[in-house]
Image (tube, rainbow, N blue to C red; front, side, top):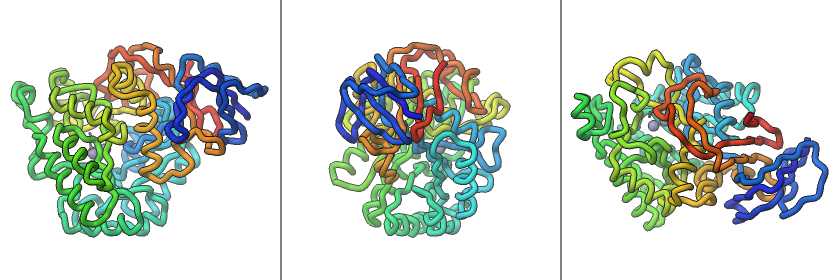
Length: 426
Ligand code: DOR
Ligand code: ZN
Ligand code: ZN
């Protein structure tokens, strides 16, 4: 089926185009982008007032498949992603069992080919079982198609082992997606180490729990030539260290998640563990630094860290609940409401951080672009559509969001993957 998208605002970092134009899709590819395309298409979409961007790419998703499919699976997670405007997602390996061998990588890839409307990529764990004791079969997993290695959910605390992994990653030129948390210092903390944690009588997680590992990882990537990508940066010093590393010309990139630029620990509703995630919600000063870093392109990527958990697990005490919140279906609205509308970043920067830069980091040559001839992965977003977030409408199998009832602006109207409409708002 051919599709003609009319009158939208085409925002494409690859061709540096930001203008009102039509976009024509044929045989799964971008076939034409022009101010006025006169063609009869089977499907015509009026995108007046909407952004037309390259399909969004989320570099950080937990699909819980295999092993915890009561929380999410490849099918529900990828459908939630399609609703969120994503045409490619990257799944983290902290599943049960851990994805630490080639056959397990293939399991997810093959399952996605059968049930996912969008592209699903799978990362491989760095150590066997994420136990931090011996390296997993990194080369085998690279041959099986992982676009990156990651120990997410944990940090490889043994720096010698990590150094070996970095050398292999450097040799194959694939990035390491680093979860930065000194587990000894974290010592069972569950909220940011500040007055809020004190008031609630809960153990804190200081900024340095994250900062010391960020520093270590940056130095180690410099020594090995490994491409390092920092996951879910949350502290003011993460911004400072990234700024320095980039000024030095180092191969470091970094992401920020919507919850960390939207909320502070002061927003935590007592007893509601949907405000518990790792790293934790920090302070106003940290949020301001994150926004500054996003504005100045110190931070390259916005990712969700979509971390589904069941209601029963999240309804217990703050102390016992698992870390993590769902994010795929709220990311676009929060990015527009908190960053684009207030003028922190431009719509072009949004397209860079949510599509173009992830494609570059993961080396997905035909994605993250609206250039003629590229794969037709496209998202159409109405930035002015206002609504109230309601987890009951989520496609995800889990509903653990701290944004229930929040008014936002910015709605995904269509998601098109490989020239097929995979999501359409009703
Ligand atoms: O909040 C989080 N949830 N942070 C992590 O590092 C892990 C993730 C999960 O897997 O639930
Ligand atoms: Zn993590
Ligand atoms: Zn994660």
